[in-house]
Image (cartoon, rainbow, N blue to C red):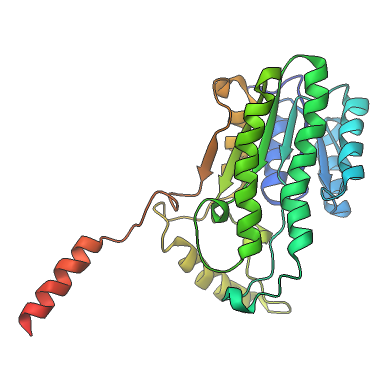
Amino acid sequence: MAQELAGKVAIITGGASGIGRATVELFVAEGAKVVIADIQDAAGEALAAALGDAAVYHHTDVGSEEDMQAVVDFAVEHFGGLDIMFNNAGMSCGAYPSFLDDKLDDFDRVMRVNVLGPMLGTRNAARVMAARGNGGIILNTSSIAGTLAGMAMMTYRASKAALVQFSKSSAIDLAQYGIRVNCIVPGHVRTDLSAFKQEGADSDVTARIEEGVNGVYLSNQLIKRRGEPEDCANVALFLATDKSRHMTGAVLPVEGGVTVGDPVNHLRDIMDARAAAMKE
């Protein structure tokens, strides 16, 4: 490793699993000191133990104002500062095929985690960075659901769309302090959040579900493989270093081309339909 983050201190929310875990491991390998902020205590503590003194776990509910202030204070006290805040933690909402069936009973919790959490993390971290006077890095994890309109899961879509707008707006607001804010937009990344698991299913059933769901995920994706957490971690590393020093307010898709455009050749379909009609 090139030790691109040597001497840097980072907080990564949702750092115990998925994209967060992959980023924790990569940042530590690149020389950073990392606070793993999560509510998954066993997984977070085990990860911190495996990574040694460079990582420490801190129980953090990102929807709690007290917890988000506490984790920033902890990073400063434990590692002596804060250079990178990665607001990665997120949650999905109830999955209903039609919005007409949506109970919206998880609206408040999803918005607290997916929108308020990054807002608190950004504000609290930026206060430390601005007072230090040496700039800083803020990263947020949105989703293709926040940039590409679609059916169902409206609460999740709304929360991730809000995060895109917040990332751009806070980039403008914080530029005066030398703080860069950028937003990562994952697509169909293979994590627990994107898995359609069947509780109690044996391994064969689970494998069949994975195969079937995977086919749907890839149907409108240009790169025909599922994204992995490491794909997003590598982009986060780029955004956390001086290699991206001229970037702020960027919204970077890491989604295999899902949001590029419609992959169906409608002109060919139209021509085929015309040819078929002429034969009748």
